[in-house]
Amino acid sequence: MSKSRDPAGRPDEAPVRPELAELRARLHATTDAGRPEAVARRRKTGQRTARENIDDLVDPGSFVEYGALALAAQRQRHAVEELVRTSPADGIVCGVGSVNRALFDDERARTIVLAYDYTVFAGTQGGMGHKKLDRMLALAAQWRVPVVLFAEGGGGRPNDTDMPLVAGLDTPSFLSFAALSGLVPRVGIVSGRCFAGNAALLGCCDVLIATENSSIGMGGPAMIEGGGLGKYTPEEVGPIDVQSKNGVVDVRAPDEAAAVAVAKKYLGFFQGPVADFACGDQRVLRDALPERRRRAYKIRPIIETLADTGSVLELRRDFGTSLVTALVRIEGRPFGLLANDPYRLAGAIDADASDKAARFMQLCDAFGLPLVSLCDTPGFMVGPEAEKTALVRHTSRMFVAAASLRVPLFTVVLRKAYGLGAQAMAGGHLHAPFFTIAWPTAEFGGMGVEGAVRLAMRKQLDAIENPEEREATFQSMVAHVYERGKAINTASFLELDAVIDPAETRAWILRGLKSVPTPARPEARRFVDTW
Image (cartoon, rainbow, N blue to C red; front, side):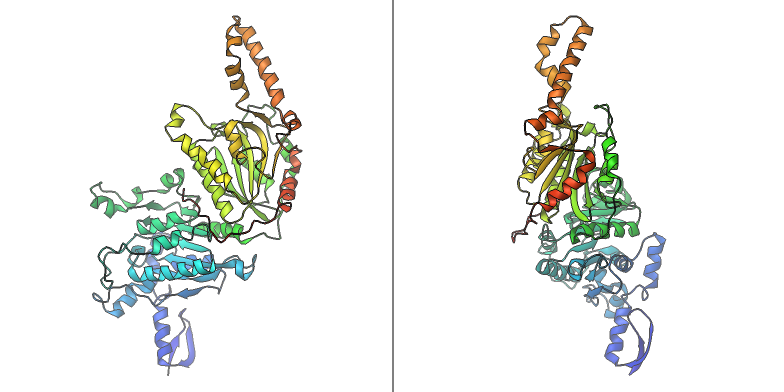
């Protein structure tokens, strides 16, 4: 018998058997307390260790680690003692814990965590690490457990000599992770460098959260240079400004602590309703829109007022900016929300916004989140430049995604509802949602009022020689068409279900949700498109 220390490095005065002492020593070598030099390296870059991120994510004392004793597959090159020191857990910490247990029961709080450790061979993916990863992914699939991935790392590791392989292209990890799409929520977090295989896993996630120091790319500097494409620093390959504006990153976070907080909030939407909530004074919605119908306004304060206080989590804010996608709560219940932004393209839906909306609908539908659509759009973006973006294909994605929705959709027209763009915001047409309601400020038409008059009455207007008389006639025609398309008149033709007091919007949404059954999760999963 001898005295030893527990895995956290605390003295344990009780005598222990030699085999337990050996185990404790090996486990201690995997901890931050047992690796002060590695921790110091992270401090120099202003980053946390993999284990610190896990501790911040999971509830205290809930994490159990799988495969902690794994070592790099390099025993032909290095002694085991050396590998114990240099390759703890083979550079990926895996396990099961609970997240948000204070708000949800054990079953809803359970979460699998996968964290690549950049202090071990730059977070590269080794053979034993892949075996651990495959084991955890199998458990996630079998038991339908959400997955959080800390993806920092440099991709495949070429110098694992113990694995009998040529190219390693039979590695199943990427397919196994992709197969979880639509089956369980998957959150990807990255701080620092994330290249090649690590980025491939990250890109499969439902949501990507990245810190301001992130660089994300399918090939790192060495691979780029090896391919004859030039020399670059890691920071020049897929920096956060690029990957946020192009839609790769869903949420930007200032640091790892903020990124973990976002991950916990995101997971909460898929864990269920919460009991405690508050909301703003709904009466302010009555005056939320300008009296001048063509004047832009800020949509986000309206969303913040409509949703529970502090519940809004916007996704892909810097991409497809004419449309807002956000997870929200209303009376504690989770929803997905789509909204046109009049400050961007006047709310017109371009190719990027279409992709953004379609994928968001898939995400919410896969995990049973009802959808709210706040419509104020002049329609799809048009013109020669827009068509260069493959607009026809991209905009059609909204109709295809809406056609397969199992969750209820509730559409609220705030102001403009014109053309095919408005139909797309309503899930295909105004009677496709469980309800389509409108504020009194809403206006409807096959295209914008002014454009419709110019197109339909061109000959009559061109025949008027006096410019002032022509303009007066034009404005009179616009007023007539506008009156015909006003919400109250449109409702009288039963093209929508109701015109409401804006202050009652929240109550309508809740009544709608209580009026539809919870959609059953079919055995056949529906994948969530990565784009």
